Length: 553
Image (cartoon, rainbow, N blue to C red):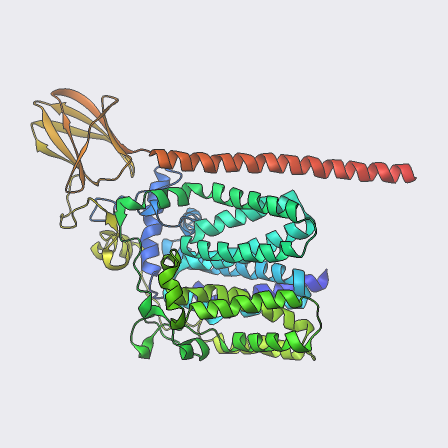
């Protein structure tokens, strides 16, 4: 027990050390960090207006709003809102969220690896995971908070499904489904990548078990549970993608790393296809490459135990390596869903899960053990400067939520994201509801992110324009009766008859969103029922054991 606590303390200390720069005041400059600060503000604002699952960002797009959260992964936004509730700024919430994800990922990586390689094998794997160069790229160069959370939760899923396959417990079915859903909520692109890898991993483990039918059936339940819980996000994002443009911005052919970029250390803060002098690092990592080399040796020199597991992970490594090189271009052009991953170098996310896991196996192979300690120290030493920030922006949240270039944009690369109907040439308006025709007196009664109430006194029939981007779900009710709306230049407009009226304008749920919400709610109910059933089984088992003890006495 004491040794296990010591191992966990070592992992926690190194996880904190790897992200210590995140605790410094100010915001470190990254590719996406400033986007996320604005997203956090918009998401939190909509959340505080009573929309427990926000879909609309009201202030963006020159105040016309966009359905940003209908398509963007929500977990980092919820995490930031929770931290903000406790008094942290959105800037600090961004950094603390990255820091906490690193802690969580390291602990689950340790627990997962320990199942196969023992306590110190788990420590070695967690260290190699924490100090893999691409993880630092995601934190300190790209600022990709969604990917960091997905990378933290994948080891949790792999640990949970491994425990389920070994122990056949309903509790791990629930946990596995929950972790799968959280990965989907964290980052939709990595979710697909990690889901495919997890299926092959689960298939490999089941192949070695006797009760295959039971395990396959319950794996199917895990998948249904994970997809069901996260349906509120992925189902509308998938089935309503035809209503927006700018979701998929990618250039596959120009984002293949060169072989030398994968093998040799480098560091830069530029983009992947920028100038070579300051290009974003796409290295696998020297320590990680050394682990791969020693793992191959172990296949021929070491004992036969877990040999098939090593083969599975080594094969996975070389397949992923191939997919990141230009020689795999025909695969990217042929396989339909490959362009969904956007950039070949994104598969480095799998590398920093596969290779550190292999690293844990070397604890039982290398003699003396000091050599694996040296490999871990090498990993820390080579990556120590990657976590150092050159400078910080000493700004507060207001810098981002009041400046036009941040709050009036569409919060997307190139400012391309928008609804398909919207006229991007429209200028910012001061009034949300504008009179286009007729004589109308207006008094706002209630204004929020996704709901607006007005009192009207219409002297003669007129026409109003609601200065919000048209998107399916927006509805207008006059005196509690839904009225026909039209879209002009991508805006919502409607006519009002003569007389006094109350007008309600709100973003209602579409049939797709209703179905998605229902699936997620049903999945929550199933979890509750499974928990009750699991508790009853556990209580019955305890009572049976007590009865057996009494009978023996």
